[in-house]
Structure formats: structure tokens, C-alpha cells
Length: 417
Image (cartoon, helix red, strand yellow):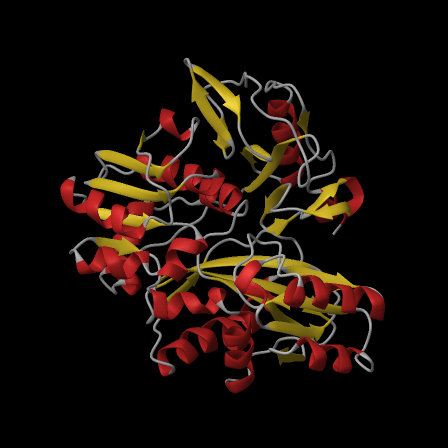
């Protein structure tokens, strides 16, 4: 089969490497891919949001199957466009991708169908939001309604911080039109868990749980990033909690989307908080998480291509989805200064025989150069979490580029748990 993967980051590299293991796959194209992905797929310079060009490429090159990985093209309707030209796809259509595309939609969905989440209010008027904040419980969480590259969430510790957040999102438009509406919600506490799931709208199969490390610096200090590393499985996510989540969150969400006429097919991501009152949804994503995918897929024993085909045919129930018993750890190597200002264009030297997923790099004169904030993710698997973490850091030592930065404590919180 000729397969096309839309996207160009570490998540896409992890998906491509896993698809390469399938005997069903003969060729893989990445649109646009990156300098590191070029080792594993044919990179095509078409941007992930160029929907018409993506559909055109798929038709002209007789693509058998497409995987749309990032949030933007999913929310813009890439799956709909590919289906229109007769290409089988993995990913939700535009109507279902709204579960991530609009936080107001997803919060209202949870309220309507009694799916546990933080208390919230939605505003389209900054003045009303300021008034509400005069008496709202503090700390509080302010969220831009639309997509904001994972940066549209601000935790405000004081009323002034909360008002500043509203001002920057709604009036200064730091996230553009994504900030036309905002959600102000209750601040929840407890361990966070990410659970990615395969679903065809009829059956839902959770993948192995994971724990992301969002803060830029050790001890969870510094600014929020797209993710500085991950481990799987998440030790806080016990079998007992998994059953509660399945019964009160996962299946009810799938059924709620069906009732709304927005049946979800693809990877549905649940960002959860394990509170004293039980698990609650912090966020939904309509796609594989990044960098969670970099620890979840290496533990997948089953053929990913086979699972994706079954989902596309609404036959997930017939699929055998199996994960290894071991653990995985991913350490993200970034450009020093990320997520703010950083320099790039430095040569990357790394081993060829390791699970290294390239996110921000370009090929120039045969050399792989840094070209982003998060440059790559180094993943290792092992029977125990401590072994996986130790192996990942050993491999990190074999990778070098000027300006390299990474956290030294990925997985330590999980080991303490």
C-alpha cells in the first residue's frame, strides 16, 4: 500500500516508523515531513494546512491510505477533502474534530452528557469575563476557545493575572481568532494522565497510559512547552481508575458524539486529572498527542496499519490491539531558550540504530540541522520504568548539537509514585 502521513513533527515520525513495520505498507510519503523523517519516508513540500494540495497529491499519486496527524488540518476538514476524492483515511472528519477545535463545544458536550470535568463559564465579551473574575475562585484557568498551538491555556494565581490573561486573549488577540471566545474554569489538582484511544465510533480501545512533562525546566519549573518528555505507562493510572474512566468518560464521550451527529473515528485523546472526587477531563484532543505518541507507539505490539484500516472500515471490534508489558521513556532534546527565543541551524550528530524521533530539523547539503524549538525525542523501552529512563538518558549522551537543552528529571515523579 502507498501511505501518506500529513504533518512534519516528532509525532508524525513515530507514526511513520511504526507504519514501516507493517508488511502491508510499501511506500510512505510525508507532507511536509522534515529532515529526519526523510530517512523513513519520501518528504513532499506541501504544508499540513494546504488541504486542496493534499487531496490533489493523494489523487495524482494514487495514495491508498492517508493518516492526518496534526490538529489544524483535521479541524480544517482534511479528512473530508480526502474522502471526497476516494482516499481512505485515519482521523476524524471536520464535524468530529470540533471536540478539540472548540473548547466551548467540548465543555458544553461534557455538561450535557454528565461527563466529569471542571466547573466552567464561557464568555464572548471581555467586560463580562472581568465582572465574573471579581468573585470567581482563585487560582483559575483561562482557555482560548480555539486552537493555539497548545499554548492557549493560562493558569492564573491571582485576580490580576486572570484579568491580564483575558486581556491578552480577548483584546490583544495573542492567539488570533481562537480567542474570540474564552472558557474560564475551576482549577483542579491531582496527578495528570494522558490516555490515547483508538475508536471507530462504535468501539473504543484505550492505548497504554502516559505522563507528559510540560514545563521547560527540571522540577516542573519554567514556562509551559509542547512537552519536554514522556513516560508510559503512567503509574497513577491503576486498573481500577481505568475502569472508572472507561465507564464514566471514554464510552460516554464516544456515545455523546454519536448522539450529536458527529461520530468520531481515529485517535481520541483524553487529558485527565485524577482529583479527590475521581477522574475528570481537562481536555480532549482529536489526534495522537505529541510527545505522548513517542512512548505509546513503541509499546504497540499489533500492526498499526491493520488497526487504522479496521477503524477506517468501522471494524475496530475485529482488530487485535495489543501492547507490550514493558515501559517506555522519551526525553525531548530542545534548542536552548525554547519555548521563547532560540538559535537554530546547528548540525545534529546522532546514532542511526536508535528510536530517535525528529521534530525540528532540516536537511541541507546532506547534513541534518536543527530547525525548531523541540528538535528530537529520544525514546527507549525496557521491562521497568527505571531501566527505560536510564537507557533513554544513555542514548541522549550519544546525540549532539550546539545549543542542545533537555530536562534531567523525566520520569522521576512517576518513579516516586
